[in-house]
Amino acid sequence: MEEVRVFPLTCAVQNYAWGKVGQDSEVAKLVIGGDPLAVVEAGRPYAELWMGAHPKGDAQIKDNRIAQTTLGQWIAHFPACLGSKVKDTFHGQLPFLFKVLSVNTALSIQAHPNRELAARLHAQFPEHYPDNNHKPEMAIALTCFQGLCGFRPVEEILGFLKCVPEFRALVGNEAADELQGCMGNAVQTSQVLKKCFTRMMNCEKKVFVDQLNMLVKRVTEEGAAGKDTSSSNGDLLLRLHSQYPGDIGCFSIYFLNYMVLDPGQAMFLGANEPHAYIYGDCIECMACSDNTVRAGLTPKYIDVNTLCEMLSYTPASASSKIFPCEQDASDPFVSLYDPPVPDFTVMRIQVPASVKQYTVAPVDSASIILVIEGDATATSAAALSDVTLRRGTVLFVSANESVALHITSQSGMNMFRACCLL
Image 1 (tube, helix red, strand yellow):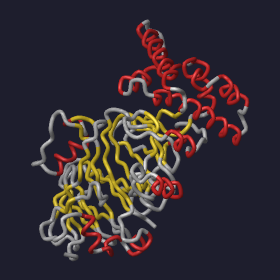
Image 2 (cartoon, helix red, strand yellow):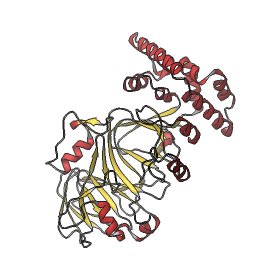
Image 3 (cartoon, rainbow, N blue to C red):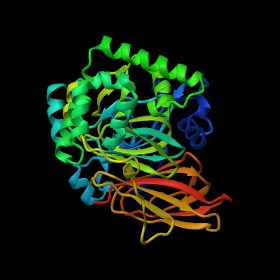
Image 4 (cartoon, rainbow, N blue to C red):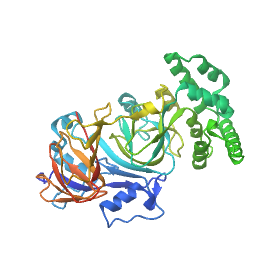
C-alpha cells in the first residue's frame, strides 16, 4: 500500500555477548519503551538495535494495512520512497543502517576498508568480508561513552615506550628509537609508526603473553601499593585484560587515543581509522555494510596483516577526533552531524518543554526517526492515521514527507533522525 508512506517499525535486536545485560542495556530499555509487551530477559545481553533494511536485521513494519512485512520488502516495491537522488545513487537501496549500541565489554580493535579494498577483500575472502561496500560510521554518545580512536600524538606514544618497558619490548628498541628520531617529519613519522605497530601486532604469541603478564602483575602490585599507575594507563589495561586475557589488543591502548565522549558528542570513523568501543551507549549510523577487519580484543576472525597494511597512520590528539555537530540554519531545535561521506547524515532533534506543536521537516531522502525521550501524537498526510510516539518508537518517513507532532510530555522531546542528504 503506497498511500501509507510514514509508519512505525519493530526493529531487530542483536544479542552479542559484549552487550549490556537485561534492563541495564539502553537497547533493552528502548525496546520495552517502544513495545510494552516486549520481554527482556534478565541475564541476556542486548547489544544492538538495528533500524533499517539490512538483510541480517530487516525491520518489521508495524502497520497491518501494509502488505509487505519488512522495510526492505517495502522499499523494493516502492523505491520512490527513498527520494529520486538517493534511489539513483544507491541503486534503489536504503544507503545507511541506523543503530543503538549498548557496550558492556570492549569490541575488537578494528578498521573498515574503503570501497576499493572492500571489493578486493570480498572477492578473495567472501566468508570473512560479506559485501563489497565501504563502511564509514559515526558514533554519537547517549551516555558517557568510551572508546579508542586513531593514533595518539607521537609524544604520547614515546611517553609510553619510555614508561612501559613491556610495551617497548614488543615494539623493539630499534623501531622505538627510529620513532623518536623522526619527530617533525610527517611522512617519515607515518612510516615508522606503521613499522612500530606492525612489529607489535606480529609478535610471537609466547613473547607478548609473557610481557602482558609481567605488565599486568606490575601494574596490579603498584596499584595495591597505592602508587599512581596512569603512566602505564593502568586502569584501562587491567579492565581490558580482565575481559580479554592474553590478547595483544591490550597493548593497543599505548598507540590509540582513549576517547571519553559526553552525551551528544560524536566520533566519525572513516575508512582505515583504527578504533574500538569500550563501554557505554551510543547511536551509530553507518553505510550499509558488514565489512570489518579485526586484529585484537575479539574471539572472531583476525586479519592482522590486512589491518596493519590498510591503517591510516596519522597521529592526532584525542580532542581532534571529536566530530563537531552544527546548528541547522533553518531549525533551531536541530543539530546536524554531517560526515564527509554521502551515505548518511544524523540529526538530533531537541524540542524544549515550552513547545507543544512541532513539525519534522521534509527532506529529499527516506529517513528513520528514533524517540529517545518524550511523548507525542504524530500526524502526517502520508500516515492515514495518527501514530503515538514515546521513548523507543522508531518511525520510517518517506522522502519529502513532513510529520506534525503534538507533544504531550512535560519535558519536551529528544529524537535522532538518520537520512541521506545528497
